[in-house]
Length: 420
Image (cartoon, rainbow, N blue to C red; front, top):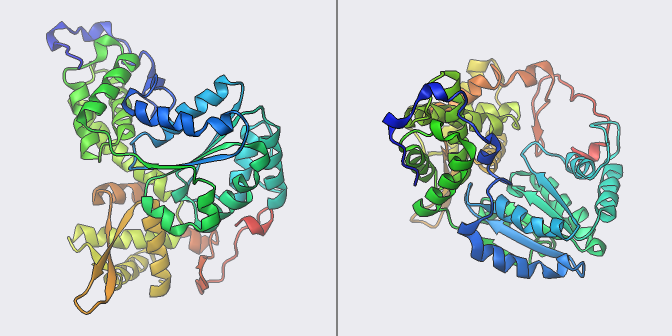
């Protein structure tokens, strides 16, 4: 633990809080993973056939946000780099298409594929060529695949990494929900079947060790306020043991202290940082969503503000209709809303609870997974009325056959429609 007496600090001698700001990034700057040493050792053994370029090895890492999945995969990948090989890291999101995934894989390995004007199959072939042509041994990290639309995830696993047996890569797939397994077919699961493990959240002792190590590297000593690490540990535990959340808070707290010219960085700065980070985290998630997803989210926000969640789909539909009316937008059907809410569940903004009745029936109830105030602020911050895309023609919104009755056109794209 870091103990600094406030009386010993001279704020005037501290011009900047940061000595190495990058030490607070969630991955790649940790200086090892002593808290996951046993997992790392076991995975290194599992990966040996791929590291020796004998055959493809697939590994699935599950666990809550901030439990070290990505860092563990990249730490394993480091041994491939030390052997003269290649590591490619694809961070997945809700707005990714297969074209976009293939383009990023290829470009990360030295290609220069454009954002449009290229057929999906061409992008896929270029990605495969670049992976096969890269120095071996090869390690591919597919991060947060649960965020991908289902068809994109399936095609990425089967038609990209699933056809690379000749390149013998190690394939890491990370996912927050273990329930992702239920959405995967046998062939998809086979791409990650050599080792599956579920990481438990970090406990208080682990978090203290991690934050102590990172804070010492990231901050100038004079900028470390009393109990700063304790505050970060408490915040991370409140967020399910999410080490990335704690690191993000520390970085934001340092920025706030610097902006206010009020060093050292204290728990008061952490409190303000927590508000900022909560909103920014939701903004990242909503940016990948389409207009009627967001109207459904606004409806759920209204229900949460009235303390009427968790709510059944009929109640959510009424709130969604009200949100559409407030935005001057025509609502779609309740069947469409069920698909919108399912997408919100996939992105982690909404939780679905299955309830069984005494008669053997069952139904779902829905509620927000983030603070209602943070989601409402993020919706306001991320772009005024978020259904304007429907009105302007940016999205014609269709999903599983449901389509708006407004006369709008999907914007033209340069690549094949097969990647939509």
